[in-house]
Length: 475
Image (cartoon, rainbow, N blue to C red; front, top):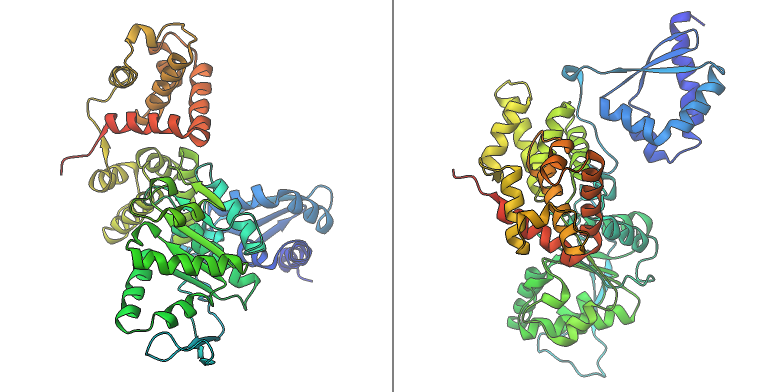
Protein backbone atom coordinates (compact mmCIF):
# COMPACT_ATOMS: atom_id res chain seq x y z
CA UNK A 1 0.00 0.00 0.00
CA UNK A 2 1.35 3.44 -0.89
CA UNK A 3 2.18 5.65 2.12
CA UNK A 4 0.01 8.44 0.76
CA UNK A 5 -3.00 6.11 0.78
CA UNK A 6 -2.45 4.77 4.31
CA UNK A 7 -4.46 7.53 5.96
CA UNK A 8 -7.47 6.63 3.78
CA UNK A 9 -7.26 2.96 4.72
CA UNK A 10 -6.89 3.76 8.42
CA UNK A 11 -9.85 6.13 8.38
CA UNK A 12 -12.01 3.62 6.48
CA UNK A 13 -11.14 1.08 9.17
CA UNK A 14 -12.25 3.61 11.80
CA UNK A 15 -15.50 4.21 9.93
CA UNK A 16 -16.31 0.51 9.92
CA UNK A 17 -15.86 0.35 13.69
CA UNK A 18 -17.91 3.51 14.26
CA UNK A 19 -20.73 2.41 11.93
CA UNK A 20 -21.16 -0.78 13.94
CA UNK A 21 -21.57 1.16 17.17
CA UNK A 22 -23.96 4.03 16.42
CA UNK A 23 -27.28 4.67 14.72
CA UNK A 24 -27.03 4.66 10.91
CA UNK A 25 -28.63 8.09 10.62
CA UNK A 26 -26.08 9.61 13.00
CA UNK A 27 -23.27 7.88 11.14
CA UNK A 28 -24.42 9.26 7.77
CA UNK A 29 -24.82 12.77 9.19
CA UNK A 30 -21.72 13.16 11.34
CA UNK A 31 -19.07 10.80 9.94
CA UNK A 32 -19.62 10.38 6.21
CA UNK A 33 -18.77 14.06 5.50
CA UNK A 34 -15.36 13.72 7.21
CA UNK A 35 -12.41 13.49 4.81
CA UNK A 36 -9.05 11.95 5.85
CA UNK A 37 -6.15 14.26 5.02
CA UNK A 38 -2.97 12.69 6.33
CA UNK A 39 -1.41 10.22 8.78
CA UNK A 40 1.90 11.18 10.31
CA UNK A 41 2.99 8.41 12.66
CA UNK A 42 0.10 8.18 15.16
CA UNK A 43 -1.29 11.60 14.22
CA UNK A 44 -4.37 11.38 11.99
CA UNK A 45 -5.65 14.63 10.44
CA UNK A 46 -9.19 14.83 9.05
CA UNK A 47 -11.16 17.63 7.42
CA UNK A 48 -14.57 18.62 8.84
CA UNK A 49 -17.13 21.05 7.36
CA UNK A 50 -17.19 23.57 10.24
CA UNK A 51 -16.15 24.41 13.79
CA UNK A 52 -19.65 23.52 14.95
CA UNK A 53 -19.33 20.12 13.28
CA UNK A 54 -16.05 19.45 15.10
CA UNK A 55 -17.43 20.60 18.47
CA UNK A 56 -20.50 18.42 18.12
CA UNK A 57 -18.48 15.31 17.26
CA UNK A 58 -16.15 15.82 20.20
CA UNK A 59 -19.07 16.37 22.54
CA UNK A 60 -21.26 13.50 21.37
CA UNK A 61 -18.79 10.82 20.26
CA UNK A 62 -15.53 11.47 22.13
CA UNK A 63 -15.38 8.13 23.96
CA UNK A 64 -16.15 6.19 20.78
CA UNK A 65 -13.56 8.16 18.81
CA UNK A 66 -10.83 7.56 21.37
CA UNK A 67 -11.49 3.83 21.54
CA UNK A 68 -11.69 3.55 17.74
CA UNK A 69 -8.43 5.43 17.13
CA UNK A 70 -6.58 3.36 19.73
CA UNK A 71 -7.81 0.22 18.04
CA UNK A 72 -6.96 1.37 14.51
CA UNK A 73 -3.67 3.23 15.14
CA UNK A 74 -2.43 2.37 18.61
CA UNK A 75 -2.30 3.65 22.16
CA UNK A 76 -0.61 6.91 21.11
CA UNK A 77 -3.24 7.79 18.50
CA UNK A 78 -4.08 11.48 18.09
CA UNK A 79 -6.82 13.12 16.03
CA UNK A 80 -6.42 16.58 14.53
CA UNK A 81 -9.04 18.57 12.66
CA UNK A 82 -8.78 20.76 9.61
CA UNK A 83 -11.87 22.95 9.18
CA UNK A 84 -13.02 23.23 5.59
CA UNK A 85 -12.68 26.82 4.26
CA UNK A 86 -15.97 28.71 4.07
CA UNK A 87 -15.72 29.27 0.33
CA UNK A 88 -15.60 25.51 -0.24
CA UNK A 89 -18.44 24.63 2.08
CA UNK A 90 -21.69 23.22 0.86
CA UNK A 91 -24.95 23.39 2.73
CA UNK A 92 -25.16 20.56 5.24
CA UNK A 93 -28.25 18.42 5.54
CA UNK A 94 -29.36 17.45 9.00
CA UNK A 95 -31.26 14.22 9.57
CA UNK A 96 -34.67 14.56 7.92
CA UNK A 97 -34.13 18.28 7.33
CA UNK A 98 -34.90 17.59 3.69
CA UNK A 99 -36.16 14.05 4.14
CA UNK A 100 -39.22 12.51 2.54
CA UNK A 101 -42.56 14.10 3.26
CA UNK A 102 -44.56 11.75 5.55
CA UNK A 103 -47.53 10.10 3.86
CA UNK A 104 -50.47 8.02 5.08
CA UNK A 105 -51.63 4.77 3.52
CA UNK A 106 -55.14 4.87 2.00
CA UNK A 107 -57.83 4.25 4.61
CA UNK A 108 -61.45 3.17 4.47
CA UNK A 109 -63.90 5.87 5.59
CA UNK A 110 -67.67 5.26 5.79
CA UNK A 111 -69.68 7.57 3.55
CA UNK A 112 -73.36 8.40 3.84
CA UNK A 113 -76.04 9.71 1.54
CA UNK A 114 -76.19 13.51 1.06
CA UNK A 115 -79.59 13.50 2.78
CA UNK A 116 -77.85 13.59 6.15
CA UNK A 117 -78.63 11.03 8.83
CA UNK A 118 -79.20 7.58 7.26
CA UNK A 119 -81.22 4.82 8.82
CA UNK A 120 -79.17 3.03 11.49
CA UNK A 121 -80.08 -0.23 9.72
CA UNK A 122 -78.55 0.81 6.41
CA UNK A 123 -74.93 -0.19 6.00
CA UNK A 124 -73.07 2.81 4.57
CA UNK A 125 -70.79 2.75 1.59
CA UNK A 126 -67.02 2.64 2.02
CA UNK A 127 -64.65 5.05 0.35
CA UNK A 128 -60.87 4.60 0.13
CA UNK A 129 -59.20 7.92 0.91
CA UNK A 130 -55.61 9.04 0.72
CA UNK A 131 -55.19 11.33 3.73
CA UNK A 132 -52.39 13.87 3.53
CA UNK A 133 -50.83 14.12 7.04
CA UNK A 134 -49.75 17.70 6.22
CA UNK A 135 -46.44 17.37 8.08
CA UNK A 136 -43.39 19.43 7.19
CA UNK A 137 -40.24 17.23 7.40
CA UNK A 138 -38.18 20.25 8.49
CA UNK A 139 -40.12 20.23 11.79
CA UNK A 140 -38.44 17.05 13.04
CA UNK A 141 -36.81 16.35 16.40
CA UNK A 142 -33.39 16.40 14.72
CA UNK A 143 -33.84 20.08 13.91
CA UNK A 144 -35.23 20.99 17.33
CA UNK A 145 -32.98 22.73 19.87
CA UNK A 146 -33.81 21.62 23.38
CA UNK A 147 -33.46 23.90 26.40
CA UNK A 148 -35.09 24.64 29.72
CA UNK A 149 -37.78 26.56 27.84
CA UNK A 150 -39.14 23.47 26.05
CA UNK A 151 -37.51 20.44 27.72
CA UNK A 152 -40.70 19.07 29.26
CA UNK A 153 -42.60 19.35 25.99
CA UNK A 154 -39.82 17.66 24.00
CA UNK A 155 -39.48 14.82 26.51
CA UNK A 156 -43.23 14.26 26.58
CA UNK A 157 -43.31 14.29 22.78
CA UNK A 158 -40.54 11.70 22.52
CA UNK A 159 -42.40 9.45 24.96
CA UNK A 160 -45.60 9.81 22.96
CA UNK A 161 -43.73 8.87 19.77
CA UNK A 162 -42.75 5.54 21.30
CA UNK A 163 -46.33 4.61 22.21
CA UNK A 164 -48.95 7.00 20.75
CA UNK A 165 -52.20 6.90 22.66
CA UNK A 166 -50.79 4.67 25.37
CA UNK A 167 -49.07 7.21 27.63
CA UNK A 168 -50.58 9.43 30.34
CA UNK A 169 -49.89 12.37 28.00
CA UNK A 170 -53.16 12.15 26.11
CA UNK A 171 -54.07 14.74 25.19
CA UNK A 172 -50.81 16.70 25.11
CA UNK A 173 -51.60 20.42 25.36
CA UNK A 174 -48.72 22.74 24.42
CA UNK A 175 -49.24 26.44 25.09
CA UNK A 176 -47.20 29.64 25.07
CA UNK A 177 -46.55 32.81 23.12
CA UNK A 178 -45.81 33.01 19.38
CA UNK A 179 -42.54 31.66 18.02
CA UNK A 180 -41.69 29.43 21.00
CA UNK A 181 -41.78 26.15 19.05
CA UNK A 182 -45.27 24.76 19.70
CA UNK A 183 -45.87 23.83 16.07
CA UNK A 184 -42.37 22.39 15.73
CA UNK A 185 -42.78 20.03 18.69
CA UNK A 186 -46.30 19.00 17.66
CA UNK A 187 -45.24 18.20 14.09
CA UNK A 188 -42.03 16.50 15.27
CA UNK A 189 -44.17 14.06 17.25
CA UNK A 190 -46.24 13.29 14.17
CA UNK A 191 -43.15 12.82 12.00
CA UNK A 192 -41.50 10.53 14.54
CA UNK A 193 -44.67 8.45 14.87
CA UNK A 194 -44.87 8.04 11.08
CA UNK A 195 -41.25 6.85 11.02
CA UNK A 196 -41.83 4.33 13.81
CA UNK A 197 -45.35 3.25 12.84
CA UNK A 198 -45.81 3.78 9.08
CA UNK A 199 -49.38 2.44 9.07
CA UNK A 200 -50.53 4.99 11.65
CA UNK A 201 -52.83 7.66 10.19
CA UNK A 202 -51.57 11.08 11.28
CA UNK A 203 -53.25 14.40 10.52
CA UNK A 204 -52.14 17.95 11.27
CA UNK A 205 -54.82 20.66 11.07
CA UNK A 206 -55.30 24.13 12.52
CA UNK A 207 -58.24 25.11 14.68
CA UNK A 208 -59.43 27.57 12.05
CA UNK A 209 -59.23 24.91 9.31
CA UNK A 210 -61.30 22.49 11.39
CA UNK A 211 -63.90 25.23 11.89
CA UNK A 212 -64.01 26.01 8.15
CA UNK A 213 -64.32 22.32 7.23
CA UNK A 214 -67.18 21.92 9.70
CA UNK A 215 -69.03 24.91 8.22
CA UNK A 216 -68.57 23.53 4.68
CA UNK A 217 -69.88 20.15 5.85
CA UNK A 218 -72.97 21.77 7.33
CA UNK A 219 -73.65 23.69 4.11
CA UNK A 220 -73.23 20.53 2.03
CA UNK A 221 -75.35 18.43 4.39
CA UNK A 222 -72.35 16.12 4.93
CA UNK A 223 -71.74 16.50 8.66
CA UNK A 224 -71.90 12.71 9.19
CA UNK A 225 -69.17 12.20 6.58
CA UNK A 226 -67.15 14.94 8.25
CA UNK A 227 -67.31 13.18 11.63
CA UNK A 228 -66.64 9.77 10.07
CA UNK A 229 -63.48 11.13 8.46
CA UNK A 230 -62.02 12.56 11.66
CA UNK A 231 -62.94 9.49 13.69
CA UNK A 232 -60.65 7.45 11.40
CA UNK A 233 -57.51 9.39 12.45
CA UNK A 234 -54.97 7.68 14.74
CA UNK A 235 -52.99 10.78 15.71
CA UNK A 236 -54.80 14.12 15.49
CA UNK A 237 -52.71 17.30 15.84
CA UNK A 238 -54.71 20.53 16.16
CA UNK A 239 -52.61 23.70 16.04
CA UNK A 240 -53.91 27.01 17.44
CA UNK A 241 -56.94 25.35 18.94
CA UNK A 242 -57.98 28.69 20.47
CA UNK A 243 -59.38 29.56 17.00
CA UNK A 244 -61.91 26.73 17.17
CA UNK A 245 -64.79 28.96 18.29
CA UNK A 246 -68.47 28.41 17.66
CA UNK A 247 -70.95 26.12 19.40
CA UNK A 248 -71.49 23.83 16.42
CA UNK A 249 -67.79 23.47 15.73
CA UNK A 250 -67.01 22.69 19.35
CA UNK A 251 -69.88 20.23 19.60
CA UNK A 252 -68.53 18.29 16.59
CA UNK A 253 -65.02 18.40 17.95
CA UNK A 254 -66.29 17.15 21.30
CA UNK A 255 -67.66 14.06 19.53
CA UNK A 256 -64.39 13.57 17.64
CA UNK A 257 -62.38 13.97 20.84
CA UNK A 258 -64.46 11.42 22.74
CA UNK A 259 -64.33 8.85 19.95
CA UNK A 260 -60.57 9.10 19.46
CA UNK A 261 -59.68 9.22 23.14
CA UNK A 262 -61.92 6.29 24.04
CA UNK A 263 -60.34 4.24 21.26
CA UNK A 264 -56.78 4.91 22.40
CA UNK A 265 -55.89 7.42 19.69
CA UNK A 266 -53.41 10.22 20.35
CA UNK A 267 -54.49 13.86 20.59
CA UNK A 268 -52.05 16.80 20.47
CA UNK A 269 -53.12 20.43 20.77
CA UNK A 270 -51.32 23.77 20.72
CA UNK A 271 -52.60 27.12 21.90
CA UNK A 272 -51.37 30.62 22.64
CA UNK A 273 -52.81 30.35 26.15
CA UNK A 274 -53.40 27.80 28.90
CA UNK A 275 -56.64 25.76 28.90
CA UNK A 276 -57.89 27.73 31.89
CA UNK A 277 -57.48 30.98 29.94
CA UNK A 278 -59.32 29.91 26.76
CA UNK A 279 -62.28 32.14 26.04
CA UNK A 280 -65.67 31.08 24.60
CA UNK A 281 -65.00 27.36 25.02
CA UNK A 282 -67.48 24.85 26.39
CA UNK A 283 -66.60 23.71 29.90
CA UNK A 284 -66.83 20.05 28.91
CA UNK A 285 -64.12 20.61 26.29
CA UNK A 286 -61.90 22.57 28.67
CA UNK A 287 -62.11 19.76 31.22
CA UNK A 288 -61.00 17.25 28.58
CA UNK A 289 -58.03 19.40 27.57
CA UNK A 290 -56.82 18.94 31.15
CA UNK A 291 -57.06 15.14 31.12
CA UNK A 292 -53.53 14.61 29.89
CA UNK A 293 -50.48 16.87 30.19
CA UNK A 294 -50.43 20.65 29.75
CA UNK A 295 -46.97 22.09 29.04
CA UNK A 296 -46.12 25.78 28.89
CA UNK A 297 -43.28 26.79 26.56
CA UNK A 298 -41.35 29.82 27.76
CA UNK A 299 -38.89 32.23 26.21
CA UNK A 300 -35.52 30.59 25.46
CA UNK A 301 -32.60 31.52 27.70
CA UNK A 302 -29.28 32.77 26.36
CA UNK A 303 -27.62 29.35 26.04
CA UNK A 304 -30.61 27.90 24.18
CA UNK A 305 -30.73 30.90 21.84
CA UNK A 306 -27.02 30.53 21.13
CA UNK A 307 -27.36 26.80 20.44
CA UNK A 308 -30.29 27.46 18.12
CA UNK A 309 -28.22 29.98 16.13
CA UNK A 310 -25.33 27.54 15.82
CA UNK A 311 -27.68 24.82 14.62
CA UNK A 312 -29.41 27.01 12.04
CA UNK A 313 -26.11 28.42 10.75
CA UNK A 314 -24.88 24.88 10.29
CA UNK A 315 -28.08 23.95 8.45
CA UNK A 316 -27.56 26.91 6.13
CA UNK A 317 -23.97 25.78 5.48
CA UNK A 318 -22.42 29.07 6.58
CA UNK A 319 -19.65 29.79 9.05
CA UNK A 320 -20.43 32.62 11.46
CA UNK A 321 -18.10 33.74 14.22
CA UNK A 322 -18.97 33.00 17.82
CA UNK A 323 -18.79 36.71 18.62
CA UNK A 324 -21.56 37.43 16.10
CA UNK A 325 -23.71 34.53 17.28
CA UNK A 326 -23.25 35.62 20.89
CA UNK A 327 -24.26 39.15 19.97
CA UNK A 328 -27.46 37.94 18.28
CA UNK A 329 -28.27 35.63 21.18
CA UNK A 330 -27.92 38.49 23.66
CA UNK A 331 -29.90 40.95 21.53
CA UNK A 332 -32.83 38.89 20.21
CA UNK A 333 -34.64 37.41 23.21
CA UNK A 334 -38.33 37.18 22.49
CA UNK A 335 -38.68 33.87 20.65
CA UNK A 336 -37.13 31.36 18.24
CA UNK A 337 -38.97 32.73 15.23
CA UNK A 338 -37.61 36.25 15.59
CA UNK A 339 -34.14 34.86 16.32
CA UNK A 340 -34.19 32.65 13.24
CA UNK A 341 -35.54 35.43 11.06
CA UNK A 342 -32.76 37.76 12.19
CA UNK A 343 -30.11 35.17 11.36
CA UNK A 344 -31.54 34.50 7.89
CA UNK A 345 -31.72 38.24 7.20
CA UNK A 346 -28.12 38.65 8.31
CA UNK A 347 -26.94 35.88 5.98
CA UNK A 348 -28.98 37.33 3.11
CA UNK A 349 -27.60 40.85 3.59
CA UNK A 350 -24.05 39.53 3.71
CA UNK A 351 -24.51 37.32 0.65
CA UNK A 352 -26.30 39.83 -1.56
CA UNK A 353 -24.05 42.69 -0.51
CA UNK A 354 -20.84 40.65 -0.65
CA UNK A 355 -20.09 41.69 2.91
CA UNK A 356 -18.35 39.90 5.73
CA UNK A 357 -20.62 38.84 8.58
CA UNK A 358 -19.51 41.07 11.45
CA UNK A 359 -20.97 42.41 14.68
CA UNK A 360 -21.45 45.81 13.01
CA UNK A 361 -23.56 44.24 10.27
CA UNK A 362 -25.45 42.18 12.84
CA UNK A 363 -26.18 45.29 14.88
CA UNK A 364 -27.48 47.07 11.78
CA UNK A 365 -29.78 44.14 10.92
CA UNK A 366 -31.17 43.70 14.42
CA UNK A 367 -31.93 47.40 14.59
CA UNK A 368 -34.26 46.99 11.60
CA UNK A 369 -35.99 43.82 12.70
CA UNK A 370 -36.22 43.43 16.46
CA UNK A 371 -36.93 45.58 19.46
CA UNK A 372 -34.01 47.42 20.95
CA UNK A 373 -33.26 48.57 24.43
CA UNK A 374 -33.53 52.24 25.24
CA UNK A 375 -30.45 54.35 24.64
CA UNK A 376 -30.74 55.50 28.26
CA UNK A 377 -30.67 51.99 29.69
CA UNK A 378 -28.29 51.56 32.58
CA UNK A 379 -27.92 49.76 35.89
CA UNK A 380 -29.51 52.76 37.58
CA UNK A 381 -32.47 52.66 35.19
CA UNK A 382 -33.01 48.93 35.74
CA UNK A 383 -32.79 49.29 39.52
CA UNK A 384 -35.34 52.09 39.40
CA UNK A 385 -37.69 50.00 37.28
CA UNK A 386 -37.46 47.00 39.61
CA UNK A 387 -38.07 49.22 42.65
CA UNK A 388 -41.09 50.78 40.98
CA UNK A 389 -42.53 47.36 40.10
CA UNK A 390 -42.18 45.97 43.64
CA UNK A 391 -42.94 49.32 45.31
CA UNK A 392 -39.73 49.40 47.35
CA UNK A 393 -36.99 51.98 47.76
CA UNK A 394 -33.52 51.75 46.25
CA UNK A 395 -32.04 51.67 49.75
CA UNK A 396 -34.14 48.61 50.55
CA UNK A 397 -33.18 46.86 47.31
CA UNK A 398 -29.41 47.22 47.82
CA UNK A 399 -29.56 46.58 51.56
CA UNK A 400 -28.55 43.35 53.29
CA UNK A 401 -32.17 42.41 53.92
CA UNK A 402 -32.87 38.68 53.60
CA UNK A 403 -36.62 39.02 53.25
CA UNK A 404 -37.73 36.82 50.40
CA UNK A 405 -39.35 39.55 48.29
CA UNK A 406 -36.36 41.85 48.67
CA UNK A 407 -33.89 39.10 47.81
CA UNK A 408 -35.87 38.12 44.72
CA UNK A 409 -36.22 41.74 43.59
CA UNK A 410 -32.45 42.17 43.96
CA UNK A 411 -31.78 38.98 42.02
CA UNK A 412 -34.10 40.05 39.22
CA UNK A 413 -32.31 43.39 39.01
CA UNK A 414 -28.97 41.59 38.69
CA UNK A 415 -30.37 39.25 36.07
CA UNK A 416 -31.80 42.09 33.98
CA UNK A 417 -28.55 44.06 34.18
CA UNK A 418 -26.60 41.10 32.87
CA UNK A 419 -29.18 40.34 30.16
CA UNK A 420 -29.92 43.85 28.89
CA UNK A 421 -26.65 45.76 29.22
CA UNK A 422 -23.99 44.61 26.74
CA UNK A 423 -20.46 44.14 28.12
CA UNK A 424 -21.51 44.86 31.69
CA UNK A 425 -19.31 42.77 33.99
CA UNK A 426 -20.60 40.77 36.93
CA UNK A 427 -18.31 42.72 39.26
CA UNK A 428 -19.76 46.04 38.10
CA UNK A 429 -23.29 44.81 38.64
CA UNK A 430 -22.42 43.51 42.10
CA UNK A 431 -20.75 46.75 43.11
CA UNK A 432 -23.77 48.81 42.06
CA UNK A 433 -26.23 46.55 43.85
CA UNK A 434 -24.97 46.59 47.38
CA UNK A 435 -21.31 45.76 47.02
CA UNK A 436 -21.83 42.10 46.05
CA UNK A 437 -19.07 40.04 44.44
CA UNK A 438 -19.29 38.49 40.97
CA UNK A 439 -20.08 35.02 42.39
CA UNK A 440 -23.19 36.41 44.11
CA UNK A 441 -24.37 38.00 40.87
CA UNK A 442 -23.78 34.79 38.93
CA UNK A 443 -25.72 32.83 41.54
CA UNK A 444 -28.56 35.37 41.35
CA UNK A 445 -28.78 35.02 37.55
CA UNK A 446 -28.84 31.22 37.80
CA UNK A 447 -31.52 31.37 40.50
CA UNK A 448 -33.71 33.64 38.39
CA UNK A 449 -33.43 31.31 35.39
CA UNK A 450 -34.36 28.31 37.54
CA UNK A 451 -37.33 30.08 39.10
CA UNK A 452 -38.58 31.26 35.71
CA UNK A 453 -38.77 27.66 34.54
CA UNK A 454 -40.64 26.41 37.63
CA UNK A 455 -42.62 29.35 39.03
CA UNK A 456 -45.22 30.87 36.72
CA UNK A 457 -45.82 33.95 38.91
CA UNK A 458 -42.10 34.67 39.20
CA UNK A 459 -41.70 34.38 35.42
CA UNK A 460 -44.54 36.88 35.00
CA UNK A 461 -42.69 39.32 37.26
CA UNK A 462 -39.55 39.08 35.13
CA UNK A 463 -41.46 39.47 31.86
CA UNK A 464 -43.41 42.46 33.19
CA UNK A 465 -40.20 44.19 34.28
CA UNK A 466 -38.53 43.48 30.92
CA UNK A 467 -41.49 45.01 29.12
CA UNK A 468 -41.05 48.14 31.21
CA UNK A 469 -37.34 48.33 30.39
CA UNK A 470 -37.20 47.34 26.73
CA UNK A 471 -38.99 49.61 24.28
CA UNK A 472 -39.54 49.29 20.51
CA UNK A 473 -37.20 51.15 18.24
CA UNK A 474 -38.80 54.02 16.33
CA UNK A 475 -38.42 53.36 12.63
